[in-house]
Length: 126
Image (cartoon, rainbow, N blue to C red):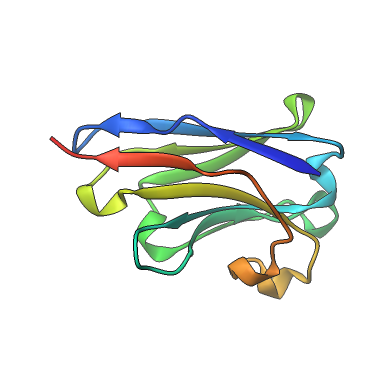
């Protein structure tokens, strides 16, 4: 599967952005799909994911993302989305979507994702 992420940009604190991740080459139903971010000098950080259809399609969130970020998908469009609200300067990072086929227990670990989009920059600044 190939992934294409988009939707990043410059936004003021308190603003919103919606990131998109479009898949080609395979259906997202066969993969866990996750969103991660990486700030300069830091490791890639888990944000949210949904499990593949065969594992129930359940959504998972990092604690910092609960209440502000929402992951969703549209199988007809082979796409996944990350809606981000109430953005803060500390949310500034490159955001990546990934696809994984490992066991569900590893869904929040970047090392378990074998497929990545190219990343999209999100900058939160006034």
